[in-house]
Image (cartoon, rainbow, N blue to C red; front, top):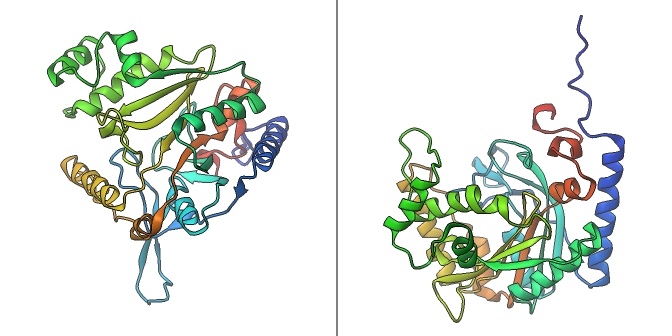
Length: 325
């Protein structure tokens, strides 16, 4: 009889040791900067409204109210961390699990490790500087590159994503022969996101980590609009050697605007035939009480570990990926 090996870990003992060292390096980095490590719930009564992110959910049958409640596994600790920021006005970070209800692959497992931190008094450029310091600390990188979203499209696709007509964007999209599933329809932002993923992302950050910033305002639900150009928001993403490593924002502080963006997300979900998600009223209440001016970022730590030690697949750095959990 063939032995069942599915009980065994996919990561080597050395990979587990590598992870422990990386966690220690990250914690030391933030200790030296006086950023407080905190712990927030993995289960929440609220979740993200983003049409492109799905959360795992479960039924909680023992609520104090006596009624069943739907709880969601966090896709990121963002809302809870911002509630702490509004309460205590101090910079914080969290190193913990996060969950997204989507398929796995080379760079992704539905349960993954996320490092998220918020720096009071920083804007997104200050935070990119600090991320560059962290990468130097843990990956020994020689520096980073920065390019606006607009510059990336102009350089690699010869089209301006901010001013080109939707017809022109659609023309470039057709020329790139990106296949859609079945009769799927796609809007302007959807085309831009796929063009970036297929035509730009593989070409950037191959030698040095590359920050892409100044994303279209329509793709930046939690970021401030740029003070000089409202067509773009103060958002950035970080790419290195084929992996998206981080997504960061100069954080939106207006509760009115944030509610409007959540409502717009849900309208988009309805248009796409997706279930409407509950708006996290506790998070909005924290904004109303006063979120300090800050910048924040979420970074995929499994991917950092892969790059640090030249692992080729995320299963090599996870004790038990979803198929063996």
